[in-house]
Image 1 (cartoon, rainbow, N blue to C red):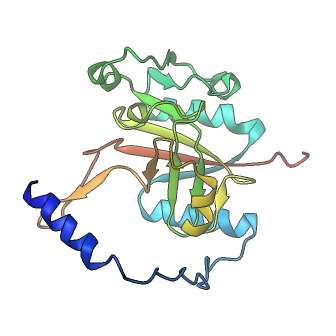
Image 2 (cartoon, rainbow, N blue to C red):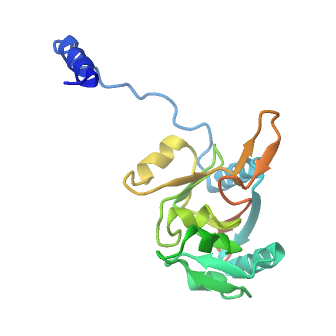
Image 3 (cartoon, rainbow, N blue to C red):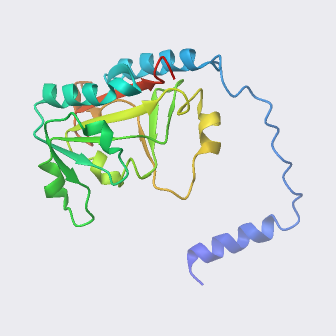
Length: 213
């Protein structure tokens, strides 16, 4: 028996006759935001902008044109696409589309100009986008290595008010990436440097239903 086992054995002996802990009372308020689509969309956009993400608003029928314009503005010649990304989203993009492949190395991904994905959901009160490797999001590393990430969020059904509202909708067994703005860090003098741990540029497109739908 090593020292760790000895300590744990003593702890188990000490608490052997302790009463069961009571169930926690969860009467706290789970959100401070009115649960309306427009309010949640506006709050999410506000926080994302504060984190230096670029936020764009559009409708489903205008989404391909907006994606194409963002890729052109970034000077992208190649774009990485997850296996389940709707093909219509990139039908107007004048860029080489590179399907995600399990054989791609980090060096391969580093040569790609942009990546376009959907998301699992977004949290309005924290300005956070959550990816969970769904078909339209792909593997975690494809959104961490390319320098430019375009992420599409459906305002109708993918924005929740708060973290307590988000967790029940997420599968804890799936790999998750939580994004609040472009990758950034600060040194001891608080000089902000972007692109250290992920994309330097994050474009978030908030997609509302078409007006006549």
